[in-house]
Length: 137
Picture 1 (cartoon, rainbow, N blue to C red):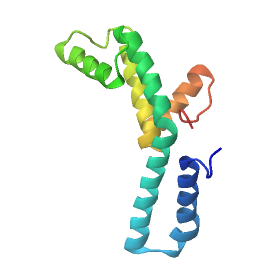
Picture 2 (picture 1 turned 180 degrees about the vertical axis):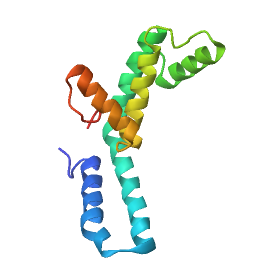
Picture 3 (picture 1 turned 45 degrees about the vertical axis):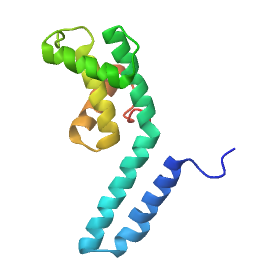
Picture 4 (picture 1 turned 120 degrees about the horizontal axis):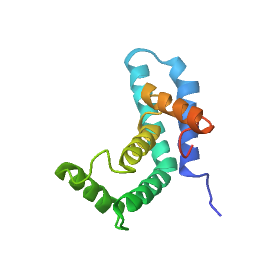
């Protein structure tokens, strides 16, 4: 049993406090710097909550695409080398889908309010009937 809430929940609480209680009382440079700090806290929270699942999805796609079971980093390197050499192109079955899914997972963590990410999620929802929630959220 844990003695405290998970790190993601703690960071979310801090972020909400800073945004809702402290930010309205500041202006100018202090408000700007606090917004940057809140964004950093939110990014770290999303990484803690979502990164492992995103990496596992990417690892599974790469294993299928490359026919191997190396480490994620090794498979990323192999994919980059194959693309750079021309041994693998966007015509390769599954490559385009892998690259898109990897980008969407990364945007869900890095920039979940980015318009291209939101459009991709709306398109995904329209395509498969899923909801508009970020992967892993």
